[in-house]
Image (cartoon, rainbow, N blue to C red):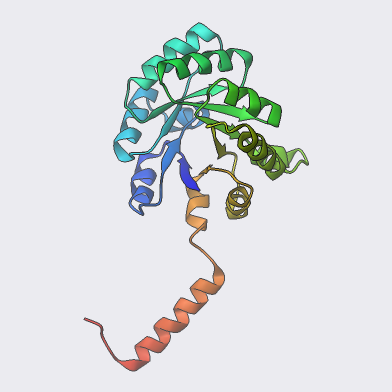
Length: 217
């Protein structure tokens, strides 16, 4: 499963990308607003830091506006993925971008029926929001499994990008449920490395090694 970072913090991205484990980046209007920087500048900088897909979201809600904004975003770099809302207008724009060969990420998906429409429109990625469904007492992973079953049955090429990931358990569950990718906040990415038994075991190894008085170099 590919791991994307959900961030516009280029300093953090540069640091975490150095691990070689970051496959792409997703952004949204909220993250852009928090950055306090011009959107086009931020997206261009992110595209220079990672080779994988970088999702940049349109702000327009009408088809013509989405197509114009999406074209401008796609022109920033070859790895830009135009992010569109899962609305009637958003899917019409998605279908047009598919004809043009422009990659798309259809966001704010909360049902398998919506995911089916996005795939039929030719979306490159579909972003089901796991955490938000959990907030409403639903099991977000059920949605991942339903989408996976539909896409496999009808051989859709659209990739499932699990979004609204809150913790490492969500990442594991998304992988087990068949998601192709997950987009996660930097904090959750860092938590994936951690386990108390790993830390305890390493502490013991280092203590025992020190007692030998040896040096590898």
